[in-house]
Length: 235
Image (cartoon, rainbow, N blue to C red):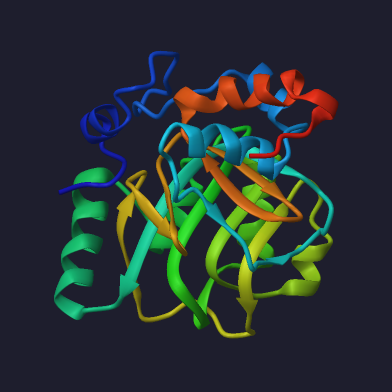
């Protein structure tokens, strides 16, 4: 049991042969991220679909800054409805064995670095499912310069709108703080709607929705945009 486990991340992302962060998370090169900013949803989809990755796209989002593209390396977090015995055990483990402080949503934010995108499954909970707001949104922006994908809620919308370098894909907003949830995994496979996101995936957020690109296919997606006639791909 543990959060952000190096051995688990290495095993689950074995097809990635490039650089990694200290925790084992794949580190797709910065240059590939820059090129991915020019890739359309359909271009990335064509590459992934052709390789058998059928469940990597999620539409139907609220978007804080429509038209702004979001690209970065995924850091994932999975929450479930709170069960007292489970919550107590995991909070104790995080604090006593991993030195974590504060609430669970802050544990994830403290791990973020430049060009990360935090990807959070709050099981589509909006009322009392608000993962971030003005304060945590500011922290995410300062650490990543990229943004967040929240399959759940946010709060402080008027403040979040004014945070520079923070794009947000979210399901809804509510004034309530986050309550009655427990984080059961950090940098683990994460279900976002009908898609699966893994730690180190390249997140591609466009006006169409959010695509999670496996790191070992990111270069192919970036090349696909350049090689496609007219910059478009139709399958």
